[in-house]
Image (cartoon, rainbow, N blue to C red):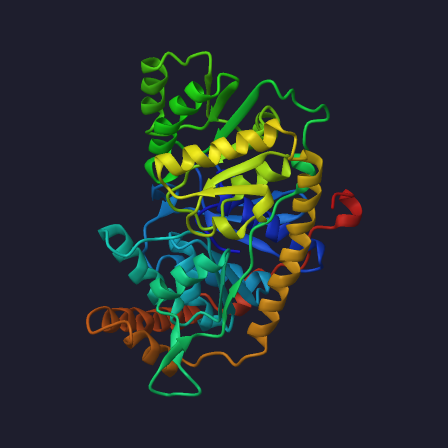
Length: 442
């Protein structure tokens, strides 16, 4: 596993990478993680339970835990790690991970196959998205397989990464490459059990757990919360999270005198998420863009009825009787919340039944098994030769194509130099793994 986003940071990509890794380990595979260092002293090799080995490469970050793309300085580290650990497949995560994209570029030099998982949705018009999409397209030109966490995410990644090939039925037409798969996220259901005692119906709490930023639709929350409080005197809000929009929530609460109706918790640790969720009966998600929405899944597993905006992959997550969808519009969100309040007040939603259904829908063992099948399909195909890689890279365009082709060729020459400078026979190969029988941790 290679990604800029991993422990000790907390987030959707970090949790997905960790849970998938330990699920694959429990199924008998050897898995290591390669990521960047964290100041002041998290650098080098670390182990985390149950038996996951992590290489923290000494690269500084530039923003949001992402490293600066450099293409060449990562190769000496990656070559040494892959060879000494006897790695045969790289699974990179997240479009904004420079380490993941560079690992895909370098892997073919050592005969290592590649898989990429995209976790987010990106636009096409702003400068940041244009640059990111071109970097992603360059990385995915020669990747062996692509995994997306939702069907909407798959459409977005296919367009951004230019994942098309000539149709076998009509050579003049293009079709989506056959190696693009959809495997959703999952969760550990036992960590999100509903409250043992049913909540009173005379007071209904609406829970919001989100980063308080524009893309999370906090402006919708600011507009809707006062209207709900005015229409339903028995409804309160519990808001957890931090971000630039916190000041807007504070101003709204002061302006409408709702200090006793809207509770702002600030940052919430992941270990405390369940304790916050079980205080409420309804979970509100107002995101303007969402590839999957793991927070929605956690809330539903904890027994909450969900109200969410109809964006991205959100409609794919839960059955219609467990969620009310609304357009990202103030009035539509208000009406969806009104319906949800009526459903909860009439006792039509069973938290324990919702928990059992989500538990059966999403579990990491199934996700690991489906990911295994993707790996098997990759090894069943022939590896792309260097000339084909150069031809595919030139398809990036008249400007980007030659630049990335030069990078590809120089990368090969640098690898030849490393083979001479640091011969494989001089490497200290890993011969022992974590002994689960001694530690007793699984």
